[in-house]
Image (tube, rainbow over all chains, first blue to last red; front, side, top):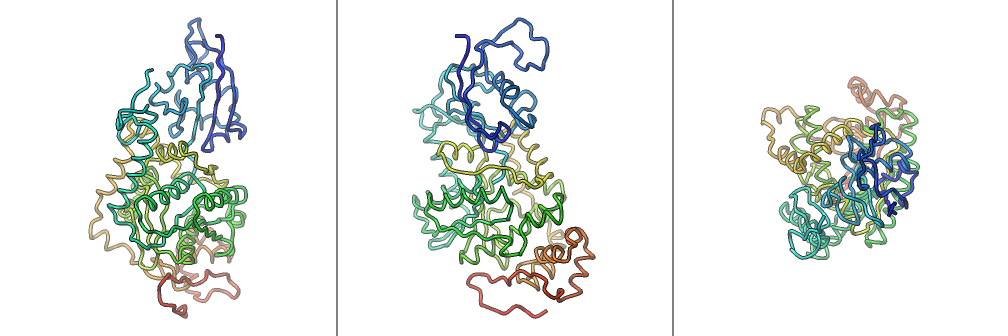
Length: 115
Length: 353
């Protein structure tokens, strides 16, 4: 399969950076350049299966509308943002290295907004 | 990656890595340990006794929403015998607080608890919108913080409750420890880790989530599908706290126990007797009867500054505060805060100045 269909949810205020829309359905390629961040320049020929780190940059470049520094920091999600992969803490799934599968649901929740 | 089984029940699939312990646990065990730990915190500190009337300071945000849910759950499960109320303060911030109050109103129905909303406008004659229009975005957090603290106590007095619980979590407390160290605020450093504080003239306040990590509170709300509101305050965020928070989150990413470790450090600090002796004694505000370390409480001096059109001076200038006090009786028609009556206290007239 050449592409993956994913369901993306934003919560805890993070949706404010994404047109104030909580739920998104997206399609990403199954194989992507080995360097996830398109801004790193030279992509080379090497490929890898799409992973959550790739997804994070994809979201930045395709869905994020403002203040990207509130979403990505030093090549990962900003500390204080929780990530769930199919309702499981991403820390149990290899974090950014988790390889995406067709139909996966990825949730990003900010914990940084006030109570 | 193969699914892992829960470290506690060794049966179901793990869905969460606990930041406090590193354990990988399943959803049911997570609910169970989260609730049990809060229960243990409450029991160990003997926070309540049967028959207590307890107000939950409710903002509609994640912490207080989870707190209301957990307090109700524990009160039923362990028969605390508490009468629970929701208490919300409406700061008067259009587009922020009015939306979050809608969440609290839904919580009132979902949790079947009486709700009291007290507004800054009602109590002080000023909304935060009006205050920001006068003082600008720079110093308004000072007003909001001082006014909220007193409004919560007054709202609690109106509900005739014995106790206010707030949703402050472990991350908030660790952040406050760091801020007090960085500011050299030794008096606050000494008391900011206490689970329960009680001033001479105010209602008890405590923090049942003192040891609950923010990550777990948010995960709990997510898995229980609790209805909460999350938006940044539209006025200037507290920049200093923001830095402390970002720093703490970086520490947590490197070593998750950092939060609980900092709280532990805060608890272990002891303030020397000589230092304590220089701290001001608590007394009662001559104007409004609220507890204060000066003749005039912070809220009264801030309010007078606003009313006289010199709000910045009331925040920063000691001489101004002294002058206001020397003038004694404030000018005719100046708005004042109603005299504070602690629930159960003898009804006494305001002292004449």
